[in-house]
Amino acid sequence: MKMARFLVISIVFLFGFINMCTAKEWSYFTYAQQWPLAVCTEHDPCVIPQSMVGWGIHGLWPSADSLSKGPENCNKSWPFDIKSIESLVPDLKKYWPNLYPDTKENSFWEHEWEKHGTCATSVPATSNELKYFQMGLMLHAKYNITKILMNQGILPSNTARYMTNETESALKRELGVEAMIECAYDKKKTQKQLLYEVFICMNKDFKLIDCNREGESQTTCPKHEPFFYPPLHPGQPMIDISVI
Ligand SMILES: *[C@@H]1O[C@H](CO)[C@@H](O)[C@H](O)[C@H]1NC(C)=O
Ligand SMILES: *[C@@H]1O[C@H](CO)[C@@H](O)[C@H](O)[C@H]1NC(C)=O
Ligand SMILES: *[C@@H]1O[C@H](CO)[C@@H](O)[C@H](O)[C@H]1NC(C)=O
Image 1 (cartoon, helix red, strand yellow):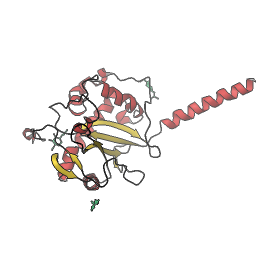
Image 2: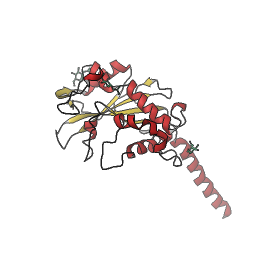
Image 3: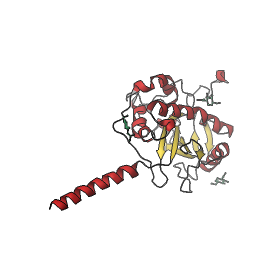
Image 4: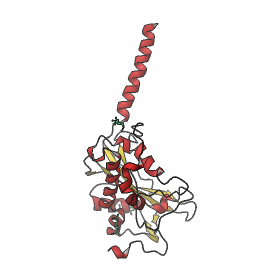
């Protein structure tokens, strides 16, 4: 009787332990950037700040080869603390903003830190909250999707039609590795497929690697029809000429 109970407890404990270890295994980062207009197809109300002239950051996510997703929510005892990233807030508001005014401004950062950031702390360059958000901002400047796409003739436009395979090839020419794109269907306004996210993958030393780890493109963009990449602010030039 006692022995049986001991066994049950041991097994439960062992499974918990195995689960804890395997759940935290991951091998690379997925760095996700998003086109604000497409983000707005997912939520109402949605506001794109005038200060935003290009792609926004979605997140930097520990990812695993064999699983569809990487680990999440790795450390419940390390809650988001706005005070540790106070110095970054002006840049975060510009490049990593929460577009949903009916939610708390910090809630997007809080979500990204708690779900993904707490899983990245084993890597020295992202070992705490400040470093994690600094890295997110640094990668945004380094892998400027507006510019990368522009170099390949892919510009925001209300009329241009872009093909998934052409866009994937364009990104590969620029980055030297396979990125991944996602689209969102805009059922509210244009009834069109819009370019939504660009994922770039990198190892734990932040060297670029192919995203399509299983060999085949995992895109949610249409395979045989075009998608659109509309300008952020109608009537406003996409690129701030004063900074060029
Ligand atoms: C979880 O967070 C706490 C508080 O920051 C920290 O002391 C601890 O080392 C973390 N645990 C792991 C496994 O990273
Ligand atoms: C990205 O590149 C565009 C075009 O060169 C530029 O206007 C913009 O300021 C850049 N964004 C960042 C965050 O560096
Ligand atoms: C993209 O696919 C179309 C057909 O759907 C094909 O005609 C075209 O050559 C492909 N382009 C590239 C770069 O693979």
